[in-house]
Amino acid sequence: LHARVYEELLAVPVVRGTKTKAETFPGADYTTTVEAFIPATGRAIQGATSHHLGQNFSKMFEISFQDPKDSSGQKIEYAYQNSWGLTQRTIGVMVMVHGDDKGLVLPPNAAGIQVVMVPVGIKATSTEEEKKTLAQVSKDYEKKLSDAGIRVLLDDDNSVSPGWKFNQWEMKGVPLRIELGPMDISKGQFMMAKRNVLDPKEKVVGKHESIVEDVKRTLQEIHDQLYSKSLAERDNRMASIDKWEDFSPNLNAGKMVLVPFCGEPECEEWIKEKSKEEAQEVEVAGGLKMGAKSLCVPHEVKYQKKCVQCIFPGCQHYDQLRMTLFGRSY
Image (tube, rainbow, N blue to C red; front, side, top):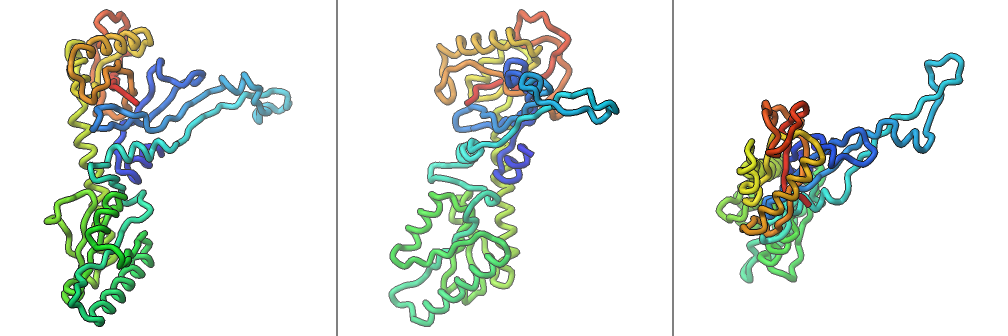
């Protein structure tokens, strides 16, 4: 569920995994997580966690029930509990992953306003008939899109220029802008500008008779493009290594590192301190010279391979080796 929120609503790729002993919620049997990556800073961020508490807290607080399998009615059982949830950090992750120098970039499935319509092409020489037709067609478009379940806003404020509106809505991150003018109406078309594509040459032409289909298709394209871009950036910043001498150079280059790891807290503490020490005399992507922490043991098969030796050179634990994702984290 957590992964679907990030990937299907926010267009943010995540790594699904289980936390190491050191990062497991205190008192829980185990903790699962989804981990995102912020390319601008080279740091990971925990997206959301789920904790299987077992019976640890129910025994402590006497949360029990009558065992339905006991015919005498005397036997009690303690509840098995879970703890999970999403917080507003999901919004922060989305902003950091997709935002650019012009402002917010909102994925269509999460945007409060998916489409903003801006009438254009009205000049001092434009006739009243042209103005009236543009206003009417704009309202017709708004109604068609709204009736189709698309969250659309018509910005027909005449006190500011279309250019001012373009900048305003780009800064607010609205995924798609529709530009409609008298010339467009005469051709039975309109122009669409994607927020995630700033090149004006990349505008998309839509047709009057297929406006709903064209807009829905373009919104889906925006989602797919945001996700694909973020996924490529993350995968390019994930290094798979098995020798300690490769750990800090990749970490300091703003990457996450996938390494063989025994899972023991003392080894993890050594990795954190050693990576912090090795960052002090070198330039670090993102500027923060903190130690690495374990992010998760990934669930997906593509991240796993046979492990021979823990990344910690002095480790003597061989029975629980798993490929584990490490990185600097928020």
